[in-house]
Amino acid sequence: MGKRKYGRLVAGLIVVPLALAACASGGDEGGTDGGGTEDQTLKLWHYESENGAMGIAWDEAIKIFEEETGATVEFERKAFEQIQQTAGMVLSSDEGPDLMEYNKGNATAGLLASQGLLTDLTDVADERGWSDALPESIQTTARYDERGVMGSGAWYGVPNYGEFVTVYYNKALFEEHGVEVPTTLAEMEAAMDTFVDAGVTPLGMAGAEYPAGQLFYQLALSQADRDFVTAYQTYTEEVDFQADPLKYGAETFDAWVKAGYVAPDSASLKAEDMGVAFINGTTPMIVSGSWWYGRFVSEIEGFDWGVFNFPGNTLNAGSSGNLWVVPENSENKELAYEFIDITMRPEIQALLGNNGGLPLAADPADVTDEKSQELITAFNEVLENDGLAFYPDWPVPGYYDVLVAGFQSLINQSQSPQEVLDTIGTSYADGVANIQ
Image 1: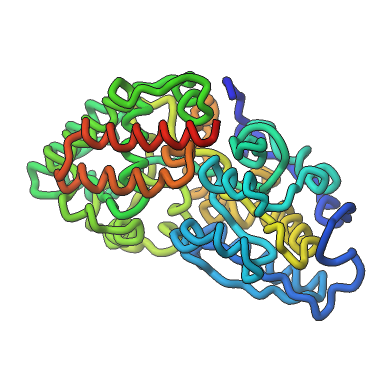
Image 2 (image 1 turned 90 degrees about the vertical axis):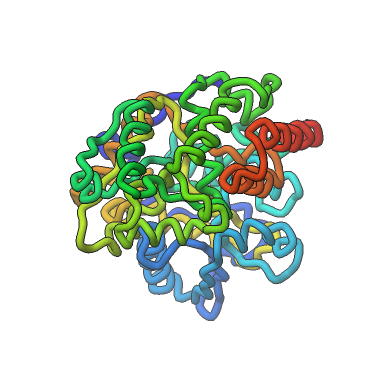
């Protein structure tokens, strides 16, 4: 994979021509033939919250799609975990959607692509201009080889927003306890000590889902370089789980639990629990993704909040956003392509950007919301450092569940860091061996 340069948002957002959405696709093997679409139905699944940036933008895209095509959208909002755990089974049947939002990476979209469950979109991406609209670095998560490894090969998905992991903080609680925004990891630990001394658990956590694994990865990345990310994600070199940076990540995570930075009972909490606690103003900080931003903008009342990037890190978990994928069994592929086009239009991308999302195909002048600009500024800082390091669960199929279980056991202190590293390292090595 090697080093890549990532484009700058807002100061240089990719502008998709308005004509893009009107382009017709050829060579579709199934679905409509580009003729009349009235009385046809596009079955659409995604898992964005109704008041989140992507949810707001996709709802508007549905309205435009139905008005312009005369077709009907049969939309179902699915839980992330629901799609994550059942996608392979559902897409092997005739019960799946025509178009679906799906997680990117080797263990998810790559796995389904290698199993023949997703439509090869390479020709469509060229014909409709998606391959020109999105920079090469963002295309990393759209393309998969025959093994399901990202970064090369055919197009199997279309990303149209960015995402990354950052630190959300409650400005009122920081001010109340005399805490400044930290710029180094040592300063962050000192800030958390201040909260602990005051009887406040400083860091919201959710051990039953992705946040714990992402915190571990952020800590590991504080000691990592791009070569490590390339080796970990694409198997260019052997990865030693009992050595830094992964050893540092697990041992520091464990030390943070012991220091009271993370509540022991958070081992059983889900991401929603963590997010709601922050919305309610009871949690000083959470380390999580930009996908929360739009929801926090719309739901947080009574206190000011903001973001700062994980202190001292050049590398951060993040990538393009999730993918629009078209199942191979889709009955209406042309309608699916048309809907993807609409989500790429500047007006939809601007709506996404002005509601706390990170658009990849907007006119910069259209993103005017001051709060949204705060998030985009933080993301630009990561991009300028070539700092997107993907996610810890991506390398091999089934790894998400392995990481969740491992870091739950660190939160509840039922295993040592070395035991956790041994478990997740063995699973990683077995998965890589199966792929190669």
